[in-house]
Image (cartoon, rainbow, N blue to C red; front, side):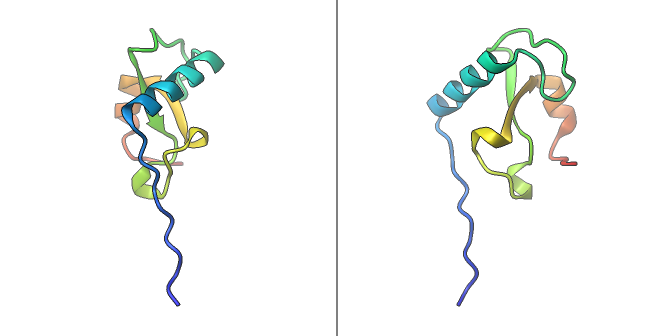
Length: 78
């Protein structure tokens, strides 16, 4: 019997917008550098544990970040 594979949940654009709104309401700080974010539309939705390393598209694995912080992080995961 084969090993069960975990399916990755793919979020729609509207679901991503709603998650960004929820995270914005919780904290207006970058999840990486902890500095203030300039605004919801100018923030990036980051996977804390990248999808390529087994992370999932779920709110517990997402954080709002500055575009630069997210880009600099790349697919690293500590």
